[in-house]
Amino acid sequence: MPDELREELVVAAEQSRRLLADALQAEDRERRRLARALHDTTLQTLLAVAQDLEEAEAGDAAALSRGRDGLAAAIAEMREVLRGIHPPALDHGGLAAALHGLVRDAQGQGGIREVACTIGDDATPGPHDELVVVLARELVRNVVRHADAARLVVQLRREGHRLLLVVADDGRGVFAGTREVAIAMGHLGLASCAERAAGVAGTLEVRPNGHWPVPGTCVEVALPL
Image (cartoon, rainbow, N blue to C red; front, side, top):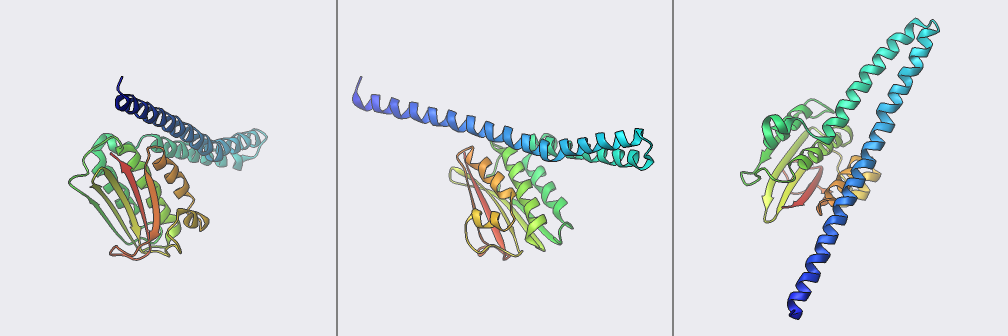
């Protein structure tokens, strides 16, 4: 066998090994994320409901009402977890409809008054559609919860062999272009987004929003196609 062909086979085998390792790591990260989500929210809510039911059986009339409210909260939390596993909007309207819906729902929340969502014609359906929706939802939620912003811009476009998701706002901004600084400032959802992007060999960058119509923060996620 020629040396060049042997070298190409070795490189291909190494690439396959790395892809498999990345896939397994991404799967493990997702299992841990789901475990944390269920333990920290739904399980705790159901434990409180169980306590309320015991108190109701002991004669505390108000405990029954608390238990009913807790059960409703647990159902809502489970629905949120299931949406994180597979966004239902993708099944009904596709990627564009799902992103437009996320941005539309953000208007009026957390002080956000103006929203815009732009999807390039070349951002056709692809292998990362579900991941794009999950990341966009978390990043938009971050803006609503932490940015103190009035305007929100979401863009999706193709750039060469990458799919770019950009979420920008006119909020308080970040002091440096690293996600670590943003996470330290309270943007905890960014850590999860960065892990998800890395799981498919993508990247996440946080920087001051100096190149968009609105000042504040710009988060750019690049996913390989």
